[in-house]
Length: 116
Image (tube, rainbow, N blue to C red):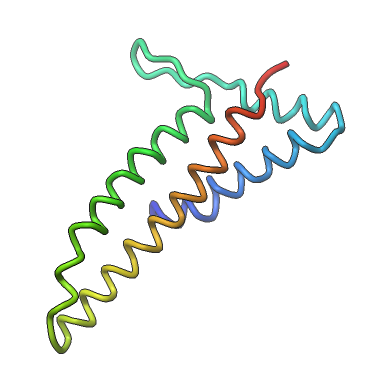
């Protein structure tokens, strides 16, 4: 569920905002700036929407990277266990690539603009 939301909502939203930023049309750039300027506050910490999404993506990316590194030795199993290990590895790699894309897109959107 989390990965579907990340792959089909969060990443395309980042791409859409990035395209609006580079469109060259002032009204589209300003509308992207309104969304990118949205503040998210968690206690005393105040972040913009792109900063928050990039931060969450980075934390998840670190987790998935560690998961991939820890699964290295499990492929030496046999039979159904081998299929299960390959499936888990494939899923972790897919999640890692989704997070790579998401991280690059949202850091680009964050650094590319904002309000004004």
